[in-house]
Length: 363
Image (cartoon, rainbow, N blue to C red):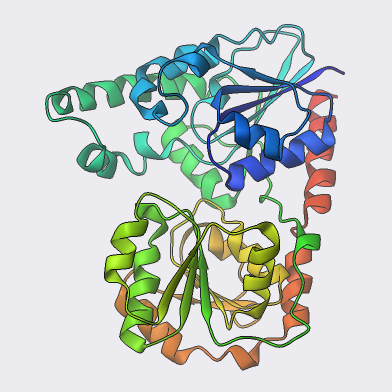
């Protein structure tokens, strides 16, 4: 069976890219179709993989300035000729689901989310998108046209596998389509282990620091409490976060996989403030045996078990998080029980379940 993988972009390394790597471990001969990619990243994380990028790859400023080419992305994803393949697996949080296939090719989409800036985050995007003033009046028109395309694209996959019950509900709400399957994203548990040298004195946040990640809540709470907090990851809002932070908050930036595993294993607890589609970082913390303090909405409700692997704070505010930190007792959690729960989300478990779905649907 000839298989192709379709992904939106590979201009950063996050949860979606980790899932793409797992798919390629299953189908190692499959070429990967991308709208555009950072070649250094693909060479690092997808070595020896055949990358087939769209016509946008060589346009000026790509992939760093990809948002300026938003109107052309539907055509870019539709430009791929996938007729030679028996199975196409799209891994989509925006455009990849819109890849065009024809019978007898089967198209299975692993859906991370209905496109955020077109639906759930539309109003925020219209307010905050980095668009020059002269072009801003045209932004609602562009968003409306992309919504029309996105609805049409969501009908193209033969099968949709939502990455959480949260996204299953959101898919029904925005696309008026119920996914055929739900499968939570995988965590590579062997990369993480509970610390054998004891736990440190810091709390931890790991995130690509963009507005919806709400790292500001953890920074504000830690500053108010005089709590030692380490923030790992880059992002466009890093400089703003540093201005909010007091002397007990340390920004460690992007770190290696080895450094990240060490940070997780020695943290007092992991703070997860966003309303995330699914969320892999809480599972990485749990695979390290550390409890999670998460905002009580979104995908975290499907991975964190209150009283066993962590707790929730009820409102997405610094005040609510501050109170939850004060009430949090890390000593009540058993690292081995926490890790055992994380192992149920391990990537080898994910592989078996996803292959089973594919076999069922192809048959």
